[in-house]
Image (cartoon, rainbow, N blue to C red; front, side, top):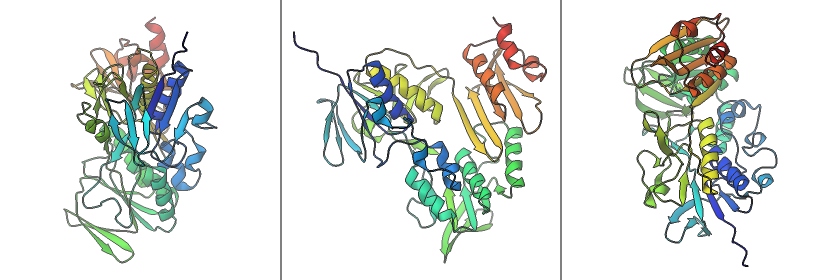
Length: 410
């Protein structure tokens, strides 16, 4: 009797979605040949330290490998580096890289991640201008910061503020320019955002909101940014942190459905039954319709589901989104789906520099946001996952541990 051929599973992308897709595919089908194609020259690494410990010189990207010590090989996954995929031939089930190498697949996982949103006034490659997405970006920026006296960060989101905090720690005079009326408008309420802004200002960071860049001019060893209101800011180095966009061009060129991301079903499958996708590049079914998420936990979890399904499983992807950010002594976290309709907003007093806020919709906790409140946020996640009915008064009462609300529902 002829022996069955092993399954060829190819994963494109060296971020957490791709790495965990490859690891879980191999774990699900140990007989499969699992190949991970990364366009970078190094072992896949964690990105969260890039805007923090790597910039301050406390760590290097290789100190935090996504696959852990030993890398992908320890999980019996074959890693091909500097393998930029340019073409997917769906008819022959083959992917092709820049060098012309062909890799056949039985199932394919696309984890192509995201690309920085480039500002026309501050294009990629402009001298003294840095975008932060890869380990090469972080190394270049860390080197530039060593000789920097004045830094301007364009963008008051999480990445921009993390970079600002790192620069402040290095003693660099730092200014943050944000076009919106306040920082972190997408992730927290106004009061919490104000507390984070106040912390930055205590550390010497100048935060300017409602600021539109009108002009950029090189000036010797610096760059001058002019705003629509007539202010000017001189910088030795500029960091642009204005968000990302899905890297879905490869999928689109192969005829897969895309719309601000690769469209997948609840099993992470695209319109092609042999092709799955996960991570930042993907739009997937969520409680409020198709969504795209950009955070580490989602990429890891969805990548793992896509990998298992590519190896023969049939597991739906269900998630409660979460994020975290470290700035100075603040550990900022959010968990849940921000309500699409007006919700009841509740704050719980906590001691010291801890903060906890909730959004309640239809009698259940929908979203929780906290600073230095890890234990409470862990309980909040379980309340959201289990769809437990809660009263706003109980959430607001610091004498009522959130864990007790879990027990009360049993």
